[in-house]
Length: 220
Image (cartoon, rainbow, N blue to C red):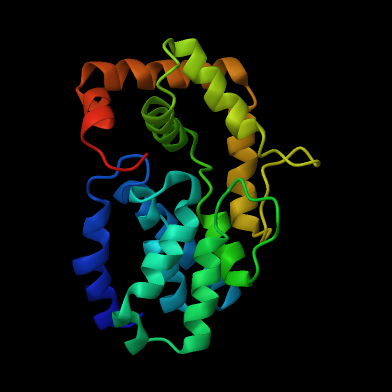
């Protein structure tokens, strides 16, 4: 990777996620790591993959429902990136950011979009539970009980199971397929998953995280 570009993102872009929770640095750095894995596997441009992973959720502070579009706007407005990429590369990256959303049914417009979308998927069930709890608590204020939040989260994610009975992957990378298989084994065991959600809720309710999710963190 270009060292100067990497230093710029670490100095100017990653700190923007410090007041994000479900889409904070834990998530962003996981997406960056998976993008690197796929970039290595498919011999893609490492700088392009790292940048789209770094910028892809910035729009959550603007508009959750259209955050992928807002993230694309933020990305294109960063004139510093013109020092490192051609106009064609920037357009490919913008499309990838706009197409990354996991609930998207249409195939991303380019392969970098497929890589980013697959990298954005939580196939670590414990990380998923943390992120889903924060998102549900922040956005579903009408839900009051544990069971209401759990059922919402479980149904929301279950909608991403495709006609073949799997959570969708665009790239069909063997490493991600193996991770998906283990994730599905755990997630589809609903009592097991409910127990993980209950443990996480009790934890955040008792350690002060719940209050910060509702009143401090800026992603929603």
